[in-house]
Length: 144
Image (cartoon, rainbow, N blue to C red):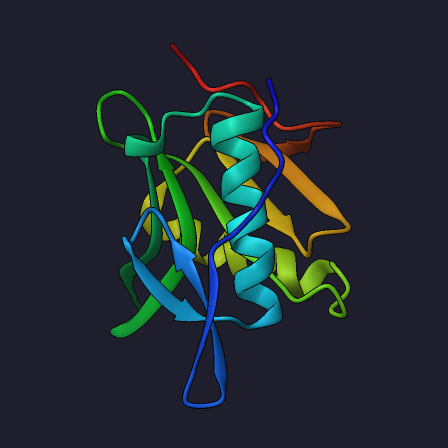
């Protein structure tokens, strides 16, 4: 039951805006934002992740600096379960990009880390007991 992604897009003051159903407002339509909206749509409509357990632009404090995680998926106890970092389709997914989401996870301690540019996807599962992680061939299903 995968619904086609048809985002609400509007134009104001010469700029294009896309509706973010999680934040319930229009946000500037950048290449990264388009990736975010498509990915969140896939999580909710394609994989059945509950919309109420997903938040965009989550603010954290890391080394006395304010950072924003692109998307955080929470578990049923409202603890961060997955952290997702988006890049524009023209930005390659490399170690530097992956290290960015790893730094954010020092604060959040999520089980899964994901990086996507809309064409490539990296997903890893954290193993805190052994201080390691392993890359997965696909996204995990949402825990029930």
